[in-house]
Image (tube, rainbow, N blue to C red; front, side, top):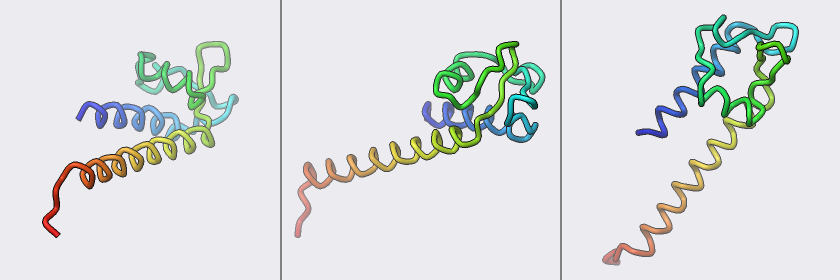
Length: 96
């Protein structure tokens, strides 16, 4: 459940910038202009290169990096599901 909140927050931040057209340095916006908090979640996305700073408090969404970030999340989820499946096969005695 907690991870769902994190993913939802990340998605909302990325969508806010995408919807505002802030996807280049020329169109960069401050988080407050878009109603976003510049909190932990925002800074984490900056650290991952999803948001890029223009140096004056404005940021823009790096669309390619955002797509790669989402793709990595999907790969991690798939890996976790596969690991759970393998553990299920190892520890559950199926009556075959």
